[in-house]
Amino acid sequence: MTTLDSRNGRRLTARGEKTRARIVAAAADLMNVQGVGATTLDDVLLASGVSKSQLYHHFAGKDALVRAVIDHVGGRVIERERDALGHVSTIPGLRRWRDALVQNNALRHGAYGCSLGSLASEVSDQDDAARRAVSQLFTEWQGLLAGVLRRLQDGGTLPPEASIDQLATGLMGALQGGYMLAQTARDVTPMATSIDMALAHIESLLLIEPTPDQATHGAVILARDSVRAHQSPSASGS
Amino acid sequence: MRTYFVEVLARERACLAGVTDGAMLAGWRRGVVEELMTPQSPYVLALRQTGDVRDRADFLDRWRELIAETVDRLLQSGARGDTHCSSARGPKADVDAQKTAVLILAALCGGSTLSQVARDPRPLNAALDLALMYFVGSRGQ
Image (tube, rainbow over all chains, first blue to last red; front, side, top):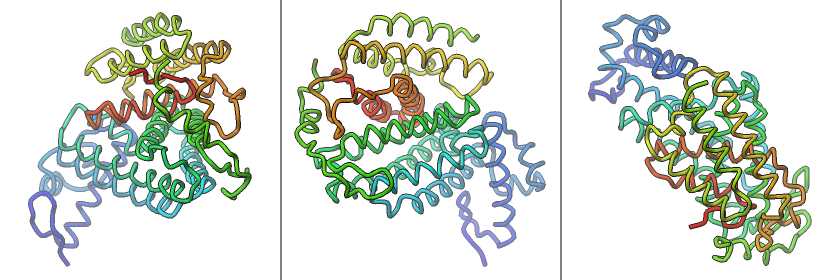
């Protein structure tokens, strides 16, 4: 069986592909732990156990390897998030997503942050193709969050005038910033606080208040008027 | 402590001390967004995930405290919008200044990362809109 090498369009044998995957996985781990800038090709050679000629057979240099790492890491994050968010249509579902992220990050005291976010902060002023690839992955991830918020809106939980994409982007900012604060503090608490507060702000727009345990169909709160007051242009003045 | 940490804290201390209403908060926010969208600004350097982690933790703690003091002052003075009150749970007497400050700082860190990678200030502004939701006129365009 052969697959196409994205770099040069060559066909890769199964064995070639395995070698390539081993290089990328080792590079991804190293870059996640010690950063993109601090990871050398020699580190990758040592960690993957491949030869120099094998590495250069697959990658022209570090930039090409970083791009492959972005695809690898981004693919895994998007797959995980699609599984976690793809069918969520309630606030309790969104909270379970939050719980899983916080729990996973707590296992390592938040030390390594978000694998995609860490790449973002390192490539933003380096290789332009890498920057655009990371940006595209974030757009995709935000699209999954926007999907949840849109289902909440379609179900009548969020008001029709709420700006879904704007809220999804804001929530992603809070999540990424939470990861960064946790990473610096070596403590997951600021990440949990940040997402909780962002979700609380989104929940404050809800037309229907969720009950503590589940149901989004709890007590109906007639908050439409006050929500409109917030959304009206006058709210941006003063 | 690194010079950019010292510089950002000095500027933030001065800017935030003068914030007593939503319009002033909007002014502060515009200034910070501008700094974070300027390559090599001390704000950009200070928020990088590089260098000594304890220095950075100390810097972020101090900045968060300055933001929390400001949020607390705004809450005390009732500067959070009377016209807003979007909460389905009525007036936000329960807004926690410390936790709000964590969210605002996270929005600055995460929003600027997203904005720098997208070369577009919109993600940072969206993150701040969500974080400053309870303060009317926070965007102040």
